[in-house]
Image (cartoon, rainbow over all chains, first blue to last red; front, side, top):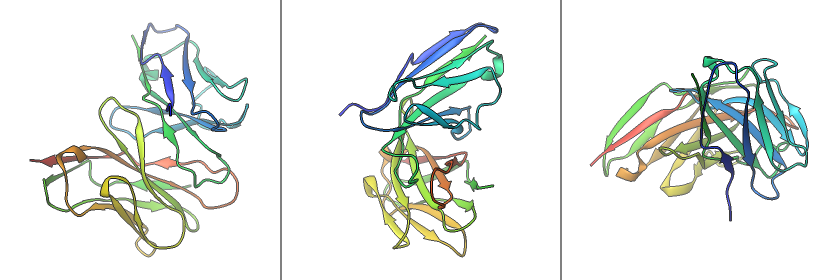
Length: 116
Length: 115
């Protein structure tokens, strides 16, 4: 079956611009996660959705970052007033359920964001 | 707070030799532990997990990992390395308490299998 997909695969923008990154999870997965991966680092947690609601947004670095999942499926990560330090690969993952904790996460290929 | 350490940035091993990728963790209680692999230009793929039970866990592609509570380790192993195993490997941990808990990833270990 189809895995997690993310669009675009690459995004180049200028400092100060607004960007949206999209994630299509695996059908039927109620849990959705966003991570940020910088070069030489592991995925850094940003936000977790269970269904439509953001159950944990403690990883969002500041109020320029926001994410939505209005219908409990597709999610969009939004970054306002982008800064060069936002450059990274943004990963999306989904799992059957988030609460139980032992369900592995299925990752998308990521969106490489470059802020010039 | 929970944490994961992967002490080796890179591991080199000859094809056909056994490989070990190290992982230690810090978390309250008995953890849930995971290994993921990342191939170039691809997303992370799940390899195996330890939840409870037998300390030796077997996963995809012939990989296995051993949970050692006293040493707080969860090293990834494979008896005979393949060139195609060359990739970036991530260990991850989360606390076992009920309900949602955040997963923390290590910084990754690059495995290079030499033909």
